[in-house]
Image (cartoon, rainbow, N blue to C red; front, side, top):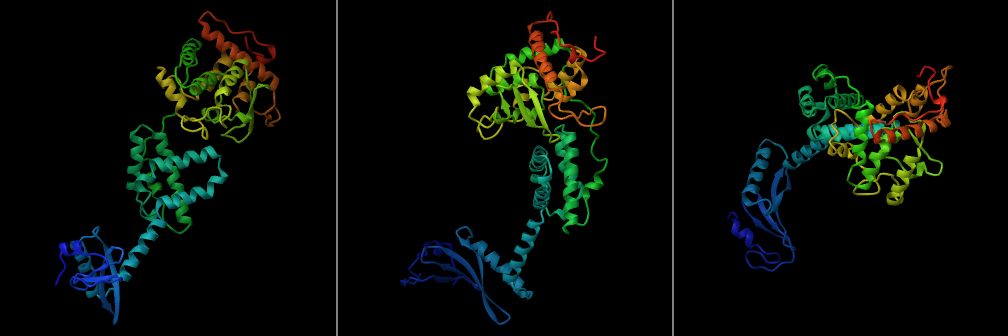
Length: 419
């Protein structure tokens, strides 16, 4: 007699429907080889008994009540259709699982992470972090689970269009380049036959050439400085905003600054430039040292000068300074984190008449001597100390008002043609 939902619900461990007491699992038959096995602990398991090739076999069809009676019968019928075609349903299930495992092992995300793991040790850490974050944020959610050999050009383009739609055209181009590298790695390792990213040449709009936003007019920059000084927020971000114009390093280098690299007594910050991997020295003006001494009372026990809001084990967010500037009403068209470098480069040269090679050294740009040799990190350090102090003094004067005039500079800081 076929089973009913009522009979299944009333089935108890240790006692069969006929009232027999047992310590072993017992079976409740349905039809077509389907039965329910009730364990001594109360578990109820659907099984299918069948014969193939002269051998009796069992197939698990689910667990009650997650798999109700109707669904168990549907699975039984599917298995019996396979048997009618001479296919062992148990072996068929194993083949499907194996195929799924192969697809998962060769998914775009798996191959991409393998590619990243091979090459990341050869990259600058910051560069590698940007690539994996870009893939995790913009690519993996959409095609990460797809077999790498099955991703098509239109499918990839649809993913890139999502990035383009938020106005990040340059990021879309970079993501396309990274995907191309992954596909070519898949080809080299025998998991794909072609690179669909090559079909998308010209499909994305070109990146418009642009420099980082910066205000290079002294009067307007004075307004920006006064706004930064008026920031009301966390002390960490407040100090970062005040320090950024004084040291004009790359934003990532500022937010990742470590106390171990800063010598307040020597007024020096020594670290490795993220972009080039070369050692660099930032002489600290007295104003910068004062800010750092003040901040040291708060974050001095942390590894980072500017630790994150949630944990001291990581630096503050790469968006913290930008977000603070936007709250202060400084539009993105006027100033970016990189903009402080452009401002310093322009005003030190055009207003203060500082020698361009000293400015380039302090910006950690590649500068070579007349014989073509790269200067080392200590080149012109005394002159750069004077330049950084003169720059800090100039910014103080600039903030005091339009009547402020540039501070006097030692002649060795000026270019021969400076007026």
